[in-house]
Image (tube, rainbow, N blue to C red; front, side):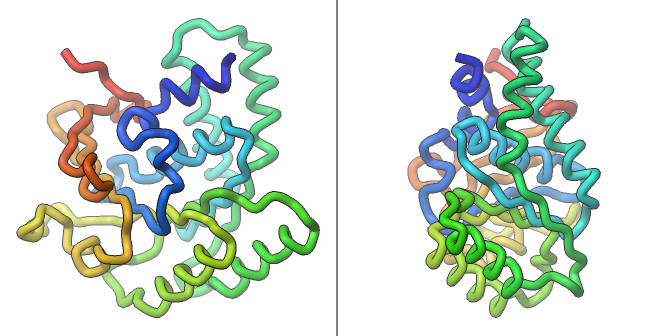
Length: 232
């Protein structure tokens, strides 16, 4: 079945494990600008869409049009990674899962957690299945986010939703003693999972920073597609 084959090929399944993606409260995908945080977050979301789940993608950086393009490209990369797929079958599946994706765009100044909470409450009022994950892409972890993270923890508890964040590190910053970028170090006790995308020659090295016994595992990704590169 195409859904199952795509989940198995997902770089998220191969690094974090499909059954593990929603186990906890907060997760982070870290890298410096332009390395692939959003691309990896999209792959996380696609695993849920392929499992017939709903997802909520909140962006402080991209327009809705750009978010839709990212998902379409991410899906195409995933399909291409398994070899030949009947194009009509791939299109039908995309049309089926894409309707379970909802995107909301904010700026740093208009970002409103109360409105997000109200939106999730509308699912409950309508007796609709809630999203299993929420992506929040573009929060500035160089600023003080304690209050916002407190509020988002409450959202996670109330709606049983796992929240994945992008977290931008900086090229000229040294890692902390435990190997974490400073942006994660400050809030590390709040996060159950964290994966660091580090450019390495012409590849991306995906390093598991937090995730139980998976911590310190390293994987190689293709920077153009975010697909896993098989080990030599």
